[in-house]
Image (cartoon, rainbow, N blue to C red; front, side, top):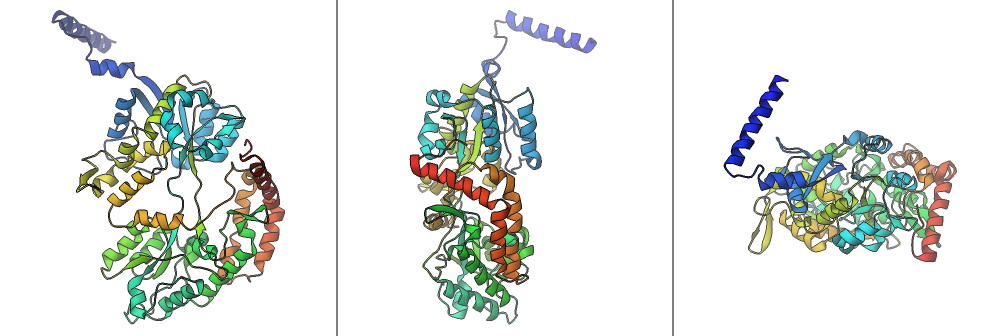
Length: 504
């Protein structure tokens, strides 16, 4: 109590002195800050970390957003491992934030049906011109329920992930040309495993590396015209790619590689760190790379072995002329305004700023700090770029597709062929024909059906015979797959009739 009285007296003396001198009680910056509308938001940190001394509410990028929008942003970031649980707790409470961001379409679908979100159509029309410009109708269509928009979507800028990369220096050592057909791929993989392509006199190379859970196999399934877990059109109906006869053919090809010792025998244990280490250490001659792996394991290998030369390949073309890889979903995340919050118009202004005027700064970082223009080209300072990656926490709230900006950013990161890789992928996508909200049966059975699919690894390793695939398909349909397929085709039929997906 005594301390509070002293503080009050001290403040009164300062105020009286200031008034006597004719000065203003508060400077304009303090007044502006006090007049800002407070906006509370619950968002995901995407695994990003803040430099020492900074956090989600105190860093240059959130201050930039606040200055430009006139808002007082109050950010809460639940731990990733309990993110969805925390959102559920928030929705059950009476202390609702102004904005929630979720990456889970099932979560969005569940709460929109409960009437938990505010319809945003009028606010978007009045305060979201850039949102309307940069977000296509097909994305808005998926945000509608009973004819109204209940979320601002964040888009997936990258349309696909995987493409094939090969050690060109190993091809040259063995007098081989870059493979194109699946048969040519087999011959190169075999030569890399058997013929000492690194010329060190040791039997220490593998022709192809995969990862756990049948990861990095997409181009080989694509050679047979399928992709695992994608919905493909057959005779006017959608069927799950994991159940098709062509998938059995792809498994037979991979099983042949394993049986002949041409693929990494430890692939079921290859988590990402182990996968990267084997490539870095020069044991791998070919793999299905993520488009950004030229900055990752490939760069690490070239640093360790300056003679290593990697090039992108055309996708393997199968016996019937098929090739390609899976695509990514257009929708990355959902921004919702809980019903009952007080400043929906300010939320839309904020998201409109991130998609529009603030997009370049939040995507690239501050000019002359993260990047500069040199000879008409954008050049990124890697150390500063990596230190300030946390800006993506805010930018990703409303990611939009901007090819010109994407090319400038990716080219600025160095000669890693990042934009070129994405162009190769985009020309070779096998599109997933189902892109609606997950159906009720999906929510009920998806986990179990994914567990059933573990038999694919056993087939490739020869633990169970290839014909066990047929038994898998039968179980898949009996244990939830048939119900999912019916719901997916009801959605598909509705789209074919009216050109729009039904309400979730």
